[in-house]
Length: 340
Image 1 (tube, rainbow, N blue to C red):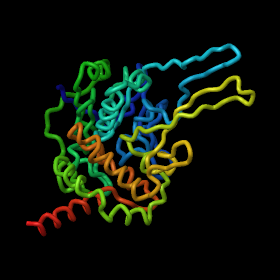
Image 2 (cartoon, one colour):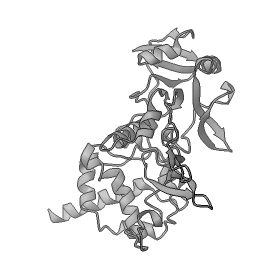
Image 3 (tube, rainbow, N blue to C red):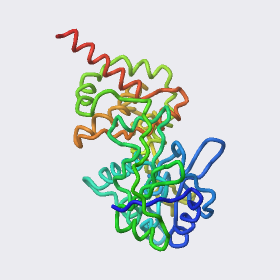
Image 4 (cartoon, helix red, strand yellow):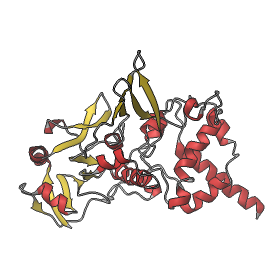
């Protein structure tokens, strides 16, 4: 692993260098305080020092809406749109969002592989950046450090005068080729501390969840929850979707479309006849939390929450997944102490 230094004054030059050779997606300002990953054309518009983007980079590999099939009954034909690898550089990705991509890789390659997602993932290169945790981040509690470089080809660590550049792979070396960087061997800045914490490791969380199925927190949270589904839509590891057929007025042609869906929406478990298997908001809240800390985690040993804090930061009702989990932990420990 080679380490270099990029002065702040040369950051736009470096981005221009990347743009000269590659398609680049990077964070941009959107509105007063929001940020979004978008295709870059102007190096000056890129923001590397940001708290979080509204939607993670998963949107490029699993689009919010995509057509899966076109059909024409008059010709008795069906055509599947061609899906291409995303041959691009994703610049300025936080470690928790890269961890989320790895979790989606597992979801979409295990069992019946999801071709569209896996094809789009090919060719994507990642340049990570460090970040300073805000009041919603808790990635450290799920084992993801702000300086975690796993999955990166290059990584930029914020420094008072610029960025420390770690080149981690052969692809990273190719990205930097032709751009002069100065060698750097000084220690990295101290990591900023998280202010939000989940207070037990995943192995213990599985036990806590096992004992908390009927906990009153689910009904208490449901009293303020609007079931709007925002927490699902902004979550970088949620991947549920709905599939609908759109048919022309003459019923001879149309298309099949996939779109993001979420377990907090009432219609998510609705089946023919109108039966809804998770009618109550409390059941939907419990399912959402169990998906992040139990169901998949029982198989992988990892939390499926990456601690980005988006669900809490975006929740209209100010519901905090950290507060829910820590409440379960406290009550579980209290009950165990009473029994002993």
